[in-house]
Length: 176
Length: 216
Image (cartoon, rainbow over all chains, first blue to last red; front, side):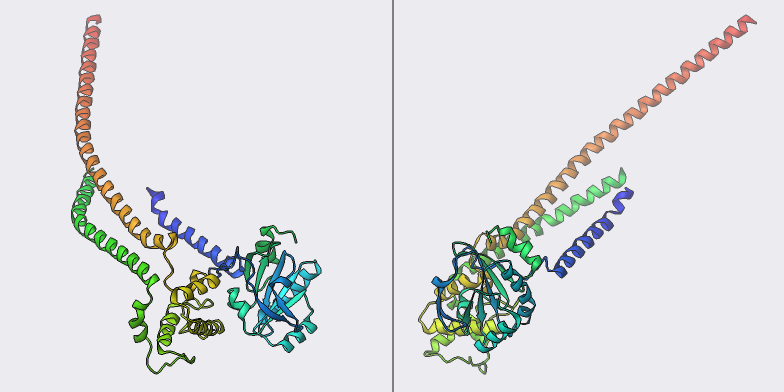
């Protein structure tokens, strides 16, 4: 009978612990209730007719053989700057990254790459965000993980970093 | 025992009170659920039915910045920007949002409308890229149907549990009453046994005393 009297307190304590853990996971970025999985997962990269940052004509056929990362970036995007160092590291580790310069200006983008290093094997210029729209991009940075058959397997919303690489990208099990 | 019995009598009375309102509530809730389902199924297909609502939610001063070749397209544009959610915002439609992506999607919507696409095609275009999240009234799937049905099922289960419990109480009430009688019988017979042994002891004592007297 006495133990039963403590039941509400026990339930309350358990709830406090659960919510505190969720909150901590939210702060570390492991749990994001606002994140949406892309509708493009399981779909091939959409067809497009654009130019590269070096003004060469580009279409889907010119994209490299996967697996590769399709990284949406822009010079107006502050978290892209935070992400850039890690992209450089990935490039050094031999990982192919295609850039999608999203709603940006060519000159500013080229200056950025000169100053911060260029981790991309190829950069698609998308000044109007048309390919971005076909990809369901809602902001920058976003990174699509594309497999060997050109199919999107995952999208990382927000800046990519080592922890997210380990937690979200590596478990997909692509042969990088 | 007395307290338990009163409690159960109370339960019984409550059961009597909730039976009718509970049933009524059930009917109302299930009615609500089915109309909700029917409505969302209907609206998913026919957006035009919402034209009046969309029109009234726009003050005449708020003219869209985009020019349309036909006023009819503009009407549909207004309905659709009310229907579609900004993918970057938690709870704003394209009409309300200032986010760059909402602006882009409004422009795209304008293009699709001028292209002569119908509402179904436009919604498909949007959900193909941004998922069901962009629609304020997502299409009927297993997930959306369960959203409507789960509350009704939980309510039904709750009512069922309550009925089963009160019925169980009634039975246990009856059982405990007969049980009480049995225990009282047992007490009486125990007491009889005690009385019997007491008499036996007394008899023995008397016998021993008599023997002692004889020995003297």
